[in-house]
Length: 392
Image 1 (tube, rainbow, N blue to C red):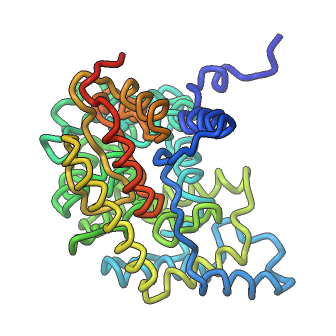
Image 2 (image 1 turned 120 degrees about the vertical axis):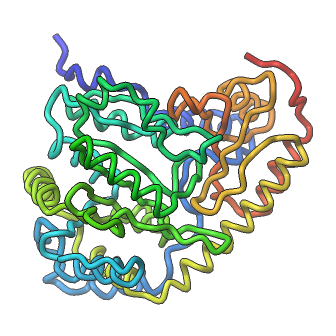
């Protein structure tokens, strides 16, 4: 007799847990490992955010339960951010909800929005958490193809009619993980039209919306007229303000969906620690100078690695956002064989592209989460490898 549910037994191993296990094994053997696998920022949380957390942690009343939807101060800060950043007006009472990081929010949204057997259109390649979230909610996943020749915007015409007919929800993610692709306003205009014509809920994961370069500014799906009738958008402070471990984010948009997710979450959690919400509110109302400074660091790292890859003959598109570089594996390698070669022969961890879906095969993802000096070392180590050798 097993005490473990089928839905858990049928979950695929979480790739990044396996990568970290390999990292520990190599380090135990004395290998100096450069980890470019997980997208966890190495830059510090801005000091003013930590100061606000420290201050609020000393207030006894802040150690009580938060309201289930998040404290008013945080929800109003989210609405303020959308007004300033996107010129979008939100009702903080009905169109904003605090989540314990967008990963948690998206996973719980599946339970709140779909019924067992419903189909969800999931980007391929896309963030690996989407598929298991659909699975755990009893849904079915159908691939929404993304193609490098098309700028990784959705190829709606390549989704079969049956999948569209059975679908209830569609997921998008821009700036994108893993591809670092960015969206235009027209991308979201088309997405809302597709969602409306097919009676779908559009869920946009905007976790990297503030990490942008080269003058690019990421739009919000909420800027499209009528978007609130068909969409919700998740945001996170994890990457923009280097607050991954703080676990704080938000979802905005459709009132019915926000209410449903709030009801579901109220039976599971009690929102986030109040001082964290207050510190996050301070971040969202700040001047964003820290964000700009950190973006400049990420861009410098990206430029250095991009230039190094070009000298090695490795093809990559120069991104306008995220903390990732998405590159093609050299000829003769699969995504896994190339990642294994880097791991075992150079002590460098990258993520094989097929971990993000079948259309990720032939690529690998690099996280720009180590100092520039370490990236220079990565390039030097890669120069010592035979990148023409076929390893399968």
